[in-house]
Length: 251
Image 1 (tube, rainbow, N blue to C red):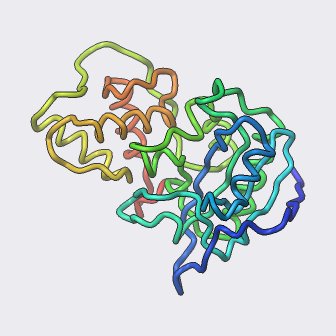
Image 2: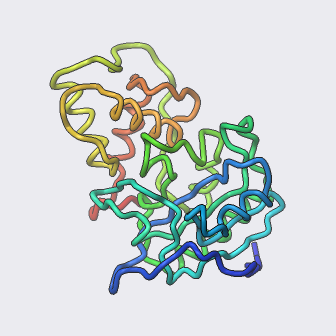
């Protein structure tokens, strides 16, 4: 797909990247507002203090708000693979969608095609491992749910974008959830931390652990998002880790 990026005038909500900092993450968001116009206005409002490098509209138009060489203020407080300042090292794409507050509408085909095309172009120009193409909710699971469980990650993976395996089918059996404690919980937390999530290994299935499990489900096992580490969730996580390449970056 060929595409054109429209420069709508820069958002003031950006700064300089740290000297020598590589761009090695791509973070996808939804706008979570009632309209495209409202979202763009907020992303360009200096009082809001938020922005992104790009906005992808429902009809497939791509708007550039911040140059890639600049540090857009899109991710906020978060963590991925031990890095705590996501904005320093990432490019952020806001996808126009009302999100959970507005009924979590489907993402139109034209919009998804534009996200794929733009992502391909970004990945072509930057050394971003597949495992570092993430949801905002992956980096900030206690605060964020975007781009949500209806975002078509599998379609992106089929186009060569991001890390993905087929979700394991739902099944019964033992599971872990809020209030559980012990070695099994610690192992679970260690697996999520190994994949990239910012979770403390405490051996206690606390609210942070529940939020991380829910974020993982939104991205990789979206049929049920409940924060319960059931067999399907655990099997999907283990499969993702098993297919990491030798550098641990994802195929």
